[in-house]
Image 1 (cartoon, rainbow, N blue to C red):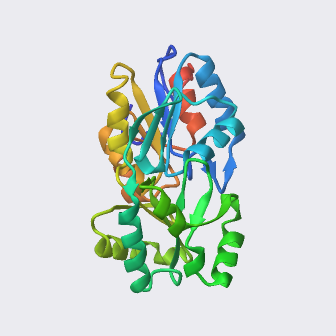
Image 2: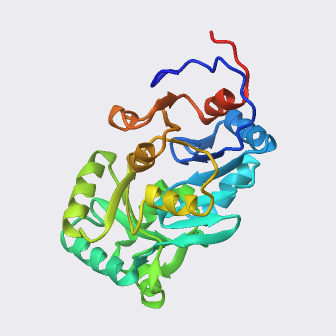
Length: 284
């Protein structure tokens, strides 16, 4: 099999008892929609005795909801861009940001004019609710955020400052960028202004900070289950550490070329990855 080959497997393959890990946005969720063929393939994957999990910047509550829509029970959840790892419902790794760090970053990013002009900061807790700096944002900006990001669904009434005062740590800090043309610039400025935090571009209009990354979290997971083969499918810049770590790494063909360059294979969908691993398919 050549690198980047899009053809299908030549040889019949038995179920590999493999752990398939998938990114969410741009991989399993495309324009906030699930491909029916991906859901069907994942169900077949699990029925064949393999394992499945998510590796995403999304929070734990969202991941459980997504798996419900997919019709599969996850064996593994790596959430919040690697800040937390759940294995069989048990937390086996957690690296959250100190609330004092987040507060300091919010202050300096606002002082330098990043928010709310260029972006909107918020924190998502494991309950799935998103906390915003409501007292420090113009009402119009908050209303606009709730309109353009309505898919977030759970907009907590609790002010982010109050959360940071009562909780010693949080999973991470998200910055939604109003205009995606500014995302790279917001990332660069955030890294310069708050260098003690690990900043990642997690999608075309999101920048996030956390205490870990996807590869660090995956290493922690594999220390708990060292014998199982692992396959990963993703598409974003924050997936690059995992692409560099794993031999069996697949990148969506919709990703930008610099990201594709880090993956061993390019694919059109998660269903195609599963098909190649489970089926006997004559080469076309």
